[in-house]
Length: 75
Figure 1: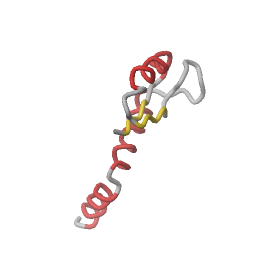
Figure 2: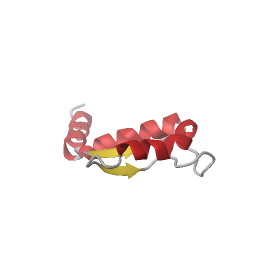
Figure 3: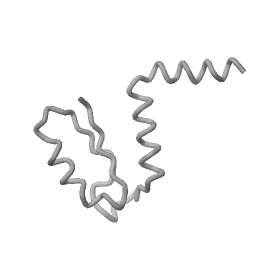
Figure 4: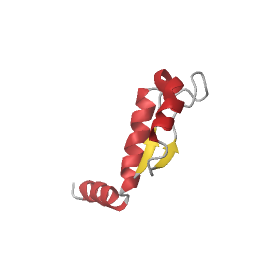
């Protein structure tokens, strides 16, 4: 399973603990959020939510894009 760890600023200090809990379980990990508090750029909930949505679209890129194109052209 591929897992993206996307921490925002208030959870940035827990990043290492989260990764440690997931390592060694056979998952492919992507650490794409904040890794430490105060780092730049500072990510907020709105940013991590957008990142999650983009990753979800990328999980099956063809299907969501087809649906979006179809709904725009049917109007």
